[in-house]
Every structure is written in structure tokens, then in C-alpha cells.
Length: 182
Image 1 (tube, rainbow, N blue to C red):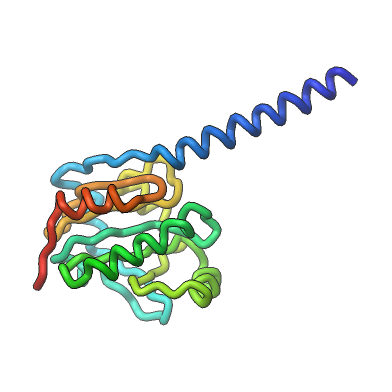
Image 2 (image 1 turned 90 degrees about the vertical axis):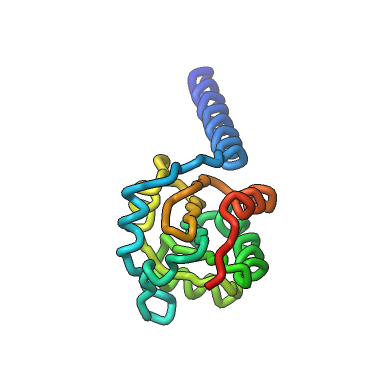
């Protein structure tokens, strides 16, 4: 009986430790400078993703303005928390030339059902399972969500962030990159 109790206690303690570590990781995500050039960002501009209406979204069409690409999923609780912040950022700064793309690492049906209840003004496209692999090439070594990459108007990857963004971080990124109107 003592072994069983010890095993149960050890299992509960391990689960608690793992949960605490993942929560700490979620709250302490880093803001990495990506450097002025990146081969992986060059590959991104040749890609195309499906919009929710089935039409293609060519990434090349987004070049020329600062761009935030956010990788998210409907099953990702931190992503759901973050989406309204990104949507407000998009709405508040698109007149200054900023773009935001919510790139869903999820199934089309799940994303459509999710967005019926949560209207977003920012563009949403579907990356499916390949989205996590793409995020890895952009510096998401953990292949975790949410993950955001910031591109300058010239298309270079400038910043990346794993975890939930906040207003202060976005303001710093905006000041570091500036804006560009066509």
C-alpha cells in the first residue's frame, strides 16, 4: 500500500511540476532579434496559403509593409487569449501600413467554427500541420504555439516571439520597425 501511495504522490508531484514549468515558460517567452537577413524568411515570400473563403493568399502580396505573422490554433488556449490583442493592433495600425496575418495551424472546419463566434478584422489563412514546420524554420525551435514573427517592409525577419504577446512588446516592435505607407 505504501508503494502505491508513494507512486501516486510522485505522479501528482511530477504533473504539478510539469504544469508549473509549462506555465512559467508560457509567461516568460523571449523576444529574439532575428537579425537583418534570413534564408527562411526568403522562402516564406514564395508561399501561398488558403483563406477561409478558399481563395489563395500569396505571401508576396504582403511584402512592402511591416508584417506580423502569428501562428495559432483553435485548441491553443494562449492563442485564443492573444487573438483579440493582435486584432486590435491590426485595426489600430493598418492605416500606418502595418499588416497582421493570423496563420492557423488547424483544420479549416475548426477555424471556421471558431471564427463564427469570434469576429476578427485581421486576415486569417490556413497553414494546417505544415504551419508548425514553417514556424520552426522561422526560429520556433520548440514548435509551440502561439508563435509570432515580425517582418520589416523589405521582407526581412526582424523579431520573433514564442508565447503570448502584450501591448508593451508590440509597441516596442512598432517603434523599432516604424511603418510604411504605399
